[in-house]
Amino acid sequence: MSSNKPTELQGDDLPDPEEEKRLAKAARDANRLSELRVILLGWRWPGKSLTGNSILGREEFHLERASEFSVKRETEVDGRKVIVVDTPGWFSSQITPTSYQQEMVRSVSMCEPGPHAFLLVIPVGMFTETDRVRIEENMALFGESIWKHTLIVFTWAEILRDRPIERHIRREGKELQWVVDKCKKRYHVINNNIFGEHPQLPLLMEKIEKIVAEEGGPFVANNEENKAQQEAPSHTNKENMNHNVTKEERDLGARPKKNCSFSSIRSMEVESPQSPVVEGVSD
Image 1 (tube, helix red, strand yellow):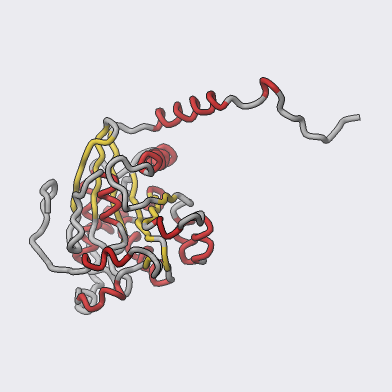
Image 2: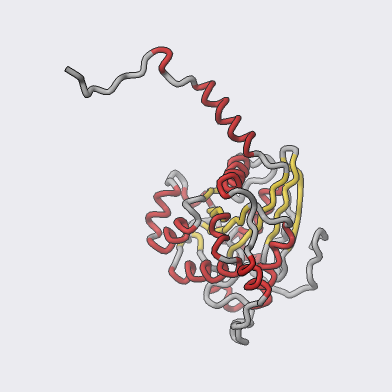
């Protein structure tokens, strides 16, 4: 008479921890890219440029003003070239100005032959339906295929304390869950207060490489998407072009919780238009 009792692993049947580590390393090595190209997307001042600086290991993206142009910086991390493009941050309470949208689209050409991943930066904090709509509108500039190459990066992770990010996503409701689902549940949590040897960066790089392996290569817009990108959005009206800083509180996008150290970036919330930034030249 057969028994339904599960067979217990004994002795040599138990998994070898060292063998598991070896296999995991082999998988990482197989996915390793000689060069990594990423584009940062998100609101003004949610930690987007800080995330770029964390990846580069130094302050390359200046935080004292909101950039109106896509800016490209590069470095070498662990023996390979890493290219990071920071894009103009968008608004929460209004449609993103056409000039900003054009610069966001231009970022793809700054990562030829194509970015390996888009990092959609969302601060841990309040997330509304308006925030979701703004993400959908701005991501649409790149075509539907962008979602397959997008990794959400949750910033201001210190607010979580000991709470798992999965619990935070559930608590924020269907709006944030919609974005996570569109990105195929690909996300990463980072603490922006660390520079240099950042303990969370190796795993971020692995996740980017995994996306490239799963999607069969970097992001490449198809013909229809290229056409849509070349036809710059023209629906922005004069009201949307108003960058009045008195609206800064309303335009921040997804907001960190009130009990966080968000006050440390209040001094950055000054928008003074300056001359265009040239690629590779410090602004």
